[in-house]
Length: 198
Image 1: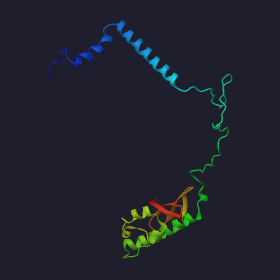
Image 2: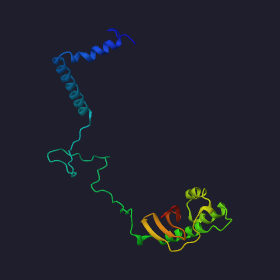
Image 3: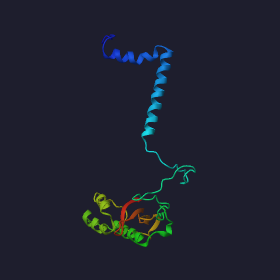
Image 4: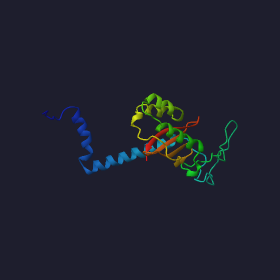
């Protein structure tokens, strides 16, 4: 264990930190010095900041009695009217707004998903799914063994569950389970980007 001595750098630091604490008068002097230093720095920073000629209120109008800067030659005027904003599209739409091509894509994809007769290879199964599936999701489906798909036929029409401007979630009933298919608008048509079991 090292022996602490009153010599060295640590002693110098210790004496600096202990000086204000040796008496209440020293503590008050230190607090006043810190306060004066803080006020001086903030005033200096305010003096260096460029001054505005007008003081706008929250409504955008200048306060009466203040000078207002008029744009000179070569200075662009501040626009008085905001540019038009495109209408907002809601994130959820009513179910009857589901696009027919999206529902058709879900039905075609589900028909290809259940089409896996005995002896069908993964490549054959993926080839049937390819026209209706995004490239990213096709990579995920490449790990699925078609023999593990429990359904063999689609038993009803597709029904939208959730509709958004560029995606639709669709229930497709099969003989073994109900598929919940996510169909997205890729810009080049509607494609399946995922599915789950209901």
